[in-house]
Length: 367
Image 1 (cartoon, rainbow, N blue to C red):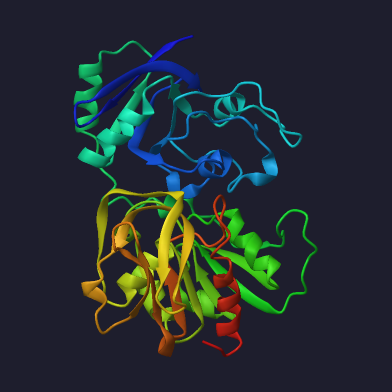
Image 2: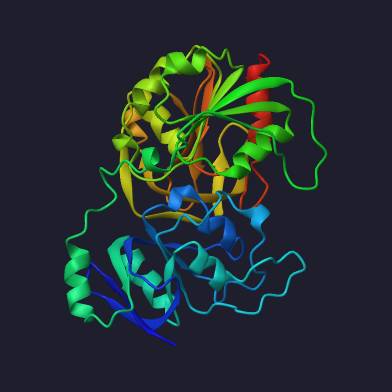
């Protein structure tokens, strides 16, 4: 068992045991409150550049099943847990979590008081941090962490986007394939496979295009609709994304998810800002102002749309009941709606899957 240290820019350090890949992890330290779905979290491209702390007391119990990944490999920069299971118990398990971390080159630390860490992050905000197992002093690591650039201004979406256009045909595992009724384009800012599977399941033919694709190149494919995907980093730093979205508005039905929601907000003339510690978990209540109901949602974002900046430009359709932040917008005249959370539920509750059907209804001429 090798000693490891997690040090934060705010001055806090935590001593634990190294797990996963033997190396140093550097990035923004955040926490996720989901009780299950650790594999989907670890493979979510929206976590690029982040060290993810799991608040649940033990992870790894069900092992790794490769079909559940949201990307081909692990995406997080580092792994933090109270305890990690090394002997999974699940008939679908193909690999242990520790072996998955080693194969994905993800350094980690376990055995720390994750409750205390979360209290620090909630009080001081998400922090730049370092996981180190070389024996460096905590103070030296704190000083290094304090000099690291934060998430603001980082264009991480371009880093994780696909490099070439491709077709996606795989639906949700175990479901019968649906006939293709509409051809849609997904602009990839770090798209999760769960989103692509849900689109296939409602009868969409799916073409995925790189984040740097111009609006004219997207429209040249004559899509019935366009999805702007989730992704990591600062939405205002994604080069050309707001212009791309602005040139698509009004020309084709648009659905924005997470980072795509923020990019559409910017395209409409709104602004975004960094949240103190973000929204990450599978239990965030969101009020649907149009449907008059409350959905429990899966979320993963560190930035949000400023509501006042959208006044007169878009309708706010969803609101987070924890802190009142904007969770959804719409511009019916432009055939656009977007949500800040993850309706594909990978992982999380299924309450919001109806939004994919709403997207198809919009394509077919509904609202």
